[in-house]
Length: 100
Image 1: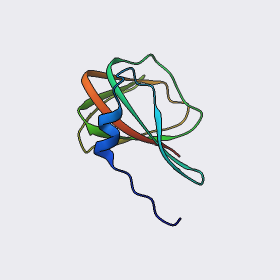
Image 2 (image 1 turned 45 degrees about the horizontal axis):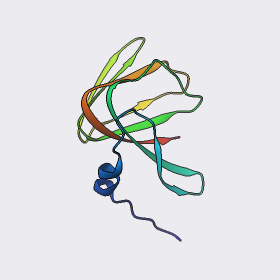
Image 3 (image 1 turned 30 degrees about the vertical axis):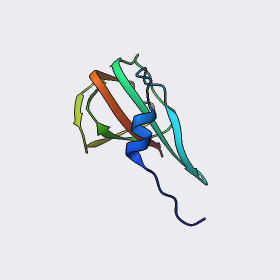
Image 4 (image 1 turned 180 degrees about the vertical axis):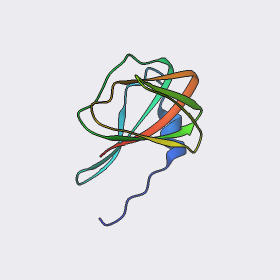
């Protein structure tokens, strides 16, 4: 298969959990798209790979040790590997992300 479609709204509606645990949305070869819903605060953590986050619905604040990144619907941010960070959402946010 050369092309795949993702219905972001349907995925958003199925993310009933708000604990920030990611679910796999689609996979194509080495490419994997994940999504999570969050309401509250994630613990400080880092990843061994780079990631790109896209806010589909809501507002997400990403804190690193050096900066604060405010993201609203339609905005995204790149988090480099090994950067310690955490996400905070005062209300439910839906985020899609891609490990790169």
